[in-house]
Length: 210
Length: 210
DNA sequence: GTTTTATTGTGAATTTTTTCACAAACGCTT
DNA sequence: AAGCGTTTGTGAAAAAATTCACAATAAAAC
Image (cartoon, each protein chain N blue to C red):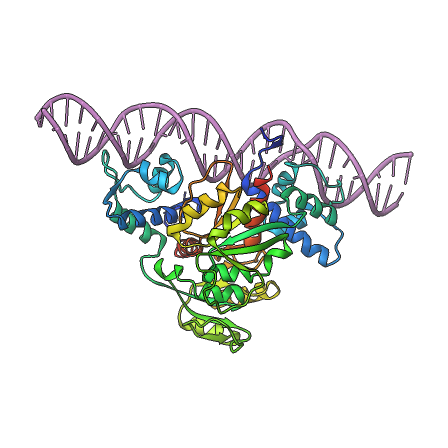
C-alpha cells in the first residue's frame, strides 16, 4: 500500500520514531556508538519487535549480530521525519500559552524555529521579553506566503480558531499544531495535531480512579 | 475482560469521551437538548458507529429514533471520567512552561485546580504574577501526602524528571502529566501521559512533506 | 391504534496494529 | 576458514480497534 510513492506508515509509528530519535540522542551524548534493538526499545518503552517493525517500514539499517549504529540511525530517522534541516514555523495567538511557547527552548534544538508571532493586539504589554517580533494578524497572509511557511502553532481563543486556521491554510500552511479545544475542519491534505492539556488530565483522572 | 470490576476500555476511547464531552458542552451552550450519534460524531470528527461503540462500553443512554439527551449524556461521561468533582493537582517545575501552565485558565473550567507549585528556586524573580504559591521542592512530600494529591504536572528539566517522579509516586501520586522529553519508568499502577511539543511538530513535519 | 420514520445498540466482518517465532546474516574467536 | 553466539528482518499468528449491517425499538404522524 503506497501513497505518494512511499508506503503508508502508521501515525503511531511516526510518533515512536521521534521517541527513538530522542533516545538515540541521549546514547550519543553518552558516547555510545552501537545499540541493539533490545536496548533501544527498552529505553523507548516498547518491545524490540515493534522497534524493528517500525524501522522496517522505511528500510534496513542494522547489522545482524551487532545492532544499529547510533549516529547513522539518528540521521536516517531525522531525514525521514523531515527535521534534518531547520523548519520555519509561525505562532498565532500570543496569550499566556502562546507567550510561553515563544520562550520555550525545546523547539530549536529539534529543528524548528518560530520565526514570527501574530496577535490581534501585537502591542499589548507583555511581562516576558522574547526575541521574536509580534505582528498584527493582518500581516499574517503576506508573511506566510512570502516565507513559504508550512507549519503553524495555533494558540488563539477557541472562537476564532477555525477562522484563523482557514486563513493559514489559504496561504499555504499544511500542518497545524492546535491548542484550541475544538475539532478543526480542514482539507484532507492538511494535517492537524491537537494538544489539549485538560483532556490529558481528564485521561489521567479516569485511569487512576480504577 | 474486566479489571477492578469494570471492563477494560481502550485508552483511545477515553480520549474520545473527553472530546465528546466538549462537543456536548458546546451544544448545551447553544440550547440544544437532544443530539443524534450522527451529529455528535460529526462534531467530534469520528464515525457515528464509533461513537456508539465507545458509549456502549459503559452503558446505554440513548433513545432509539431520537438520540441522546445532551445534559444527561454530559453528566454520564463526566462521572465516568471522574471529573464530576474538582480534582487537586500540583505542578512541579516553574520554568517558562510551568509558569504558563499556572496561568492557564483552561484547567479549572474542566474540573482541575492547581493547588500549589514547587520549584528548586521558589523565590526566583518571575515576570508573571500568579495566584498559586510557589514552594520549595523540599516541601513537596509533606504537601502531597497531607492534601492527598493524586495527580501532578511535571515540567522540570529532563535531568531531574525521573527523580522528581519517584518522589511524587512515593508520596501517593498516581497520575503524572509529563512535559520532560524522557520515558519515565514507573510502577504499573501509575499512569503517565507525555506531552512533547517538539514531537508533535516533528510529526506534522513528516506528514506534510509527503 | 397502527403505520411510518428515525436512530440506537450490537454481533459479525474487516482492518489495523502488535507480537511471535525463526531463518538469515554478520562479527568474533579459534 | 569454519564454527559459535548474537541480533536483525520478516512472514505468519494473534490481538485490538474500527466499521459494517441490521434487528430492535421508540417517537411521531396519521
